[in-house]
Length: 205
Figure 1: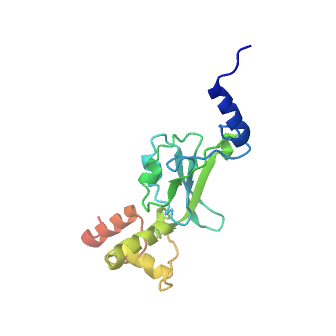
Figure 2 (figure 1 turned 30 degrees about the vertical axis):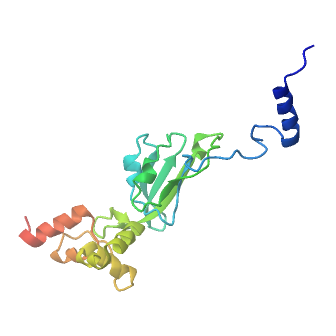
Figure 3 (figure 1 turned 180 degrees about the vertical axis):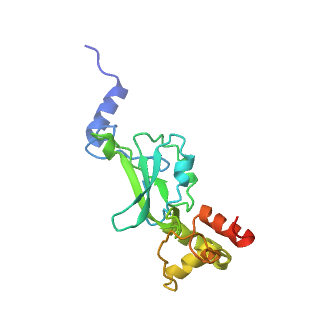
């Protein structure tokens, strides 16, 4: 029997004192680098529900849908299926607020069904006072107001929205009557705003 080499003997003695060289996973989590692209997560406080993340997702992993709750609130729901996500980071890079969605350091993403492999956020939508279609999420309009500052008062929609937020204006009930020139002073979706503007400029066509 040959005597072991001195180098191998040194390594054996070192491992007895300091422990194994490998990480003690799964007993303790493995240290991860700072720039790891882990599971994307929405931040409900900073996400405005604009849907920019869904527009730039190359894997089409983000689903945007709208629904009406039983209390009449219209909401927009963004659902990220991270079983489809390729962790490219485009959603974080192109986020409108820069903080609405971020790639976390979570990488242990196994599960028993795809139904649980989702990350979602829900935002209330301001509805058109004529047709009922969604205009934009409430948080998105608030963010635009903060960004524009005093310039926001030059936009009819933002002005009416501000008055409604301050309690200076009550949303009128929807009705089925024909368009009127006074409807220009209502919260309208782009299609209805265009129709009312044409009526105001050219009269009934």
